[in-house]
Amino acid sequence: MKIIKIVDELNLENGSNYKLAVLKKYAGNETLKRVLQMTHDRVKFTYGLSMRRWNSGEAQERIFNPENPVRYELDEALDFMEYKLSTREVTGNAAAEQMEQLFMYLSVDDTLIATRVLNRDLRINAGRTSINKVFPDLISKPVYMRCGIYNSKTSGKINVKNAIVQLKADGTYREFTVSDGNVSCTSRSGEEYEYPVHFAEMETFPDGHYFGELTVLGKDGKVLPRSEGNGLINSSEPPHNYIIFDAWDYVTREEYAMAMKKEKCSTPYFERLAALKSILAKNGSYAHIRIIETHVVNSLGEALEHCIEWMNDGLEGAILKDAHSVFRDGTNPQQLKLKLEIDIDVRVTGFKEGNPGTVREKTFGAMIFETDDGMIKGKTSGFTDAQLLDFNGRREEMIGKIITVKCNDITRGRSNDYYALSHPRFIEIRDDKKDTDTLERAEASKLMAMELK
Image (tube, rainbow, N blue to C red; front, side):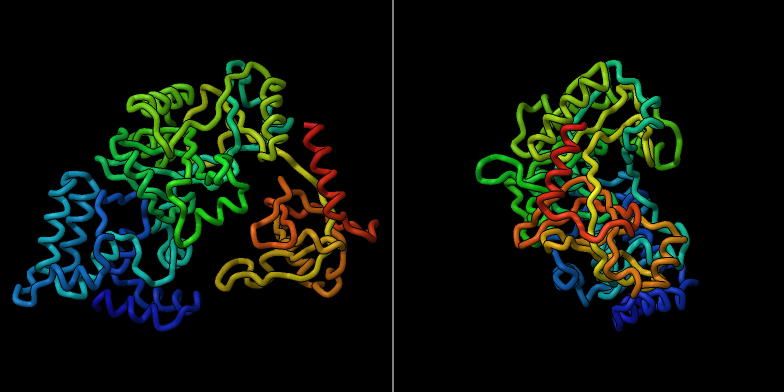
């Protein structure tokens, strides 16, 4: 069956259960499976070519000539993309020209599908999670090195002699990939983003993966608060000229591939950081790319001094890194967060239903809360499986109860008349309390936590 027909059928309804049923219906279609993987797997497939200068309709109108016979099938176009583009055997202008030649001899429908594969969007409103439910492990999870939390258990895993402490930027994580002068950018979940200003500055960078955080500068030249800056970054019209990429790591394509295969890398962090600094220094200064604020320390006390200074400026905290730590996929015990943690008592006001097709569908997705003065509102998760079943079975009883949540900050969005908690996690029910914290008391708890740090 033609892939375009399956795509059209997937778009007849937008519910996740419906889309899963359609995917299961065609689970034996190997071309569909290949199209899904080559579109969504940004780890295994990087084409170094985008057809975004056309939308699909324009591509057909400008390239497809009805007088040309259809000589190629979709799988032949996919072969070229997988074995020529993704392997970098063909790059640059030659890649674009050969792809256009292929389009000339594909059917209109296959041209549309091939264009969408290159643009990494089949327009079926179904992502990696849904696809992997039908085709297990078809779409690779992006490589992402998480930080651990500094505590008594993790403190022994990091050498604080000549360690590196860096600002925990108040922005949004991004990974930029450079390959033969082609630049792309993804989030930790693998979603692709376009940052033309940054792409232009990075196109001469060495091949590899560049990790960091995007923040937005205000008119006064200072970084905007997370709630405001991230809102602008994720808007339909990001302020590209005011977005800064604060980079903290550079990993070669070879070591990135090793991490993806769970093989041990060998380059220590101090060498990767030095390479990143050298790359940025070669062409002078960049307007939109810089190294995250970094200091070398020889004790936890020195690291905490920097952490406190940043928190006193309203920032989230710091990251302490062992200088000899190597790149890996997953949580790195030699890369630890030093950050603010605040306990705040709030009142349960409702439940957010779990998303259909997920494990939370039978219980709930999050617990909704607010403080009695109405100045702090939000929702929290962080429940064990037993707690999910327990609280779901007595929702009416839970409404009105006071619970303690742990968070990292108290923030206020641009358009909100109330405050929110950063990364709230459920701690416990407080049957011994009748009143929640107020905004004033929560802010006082934040200041106390900062001083204790």
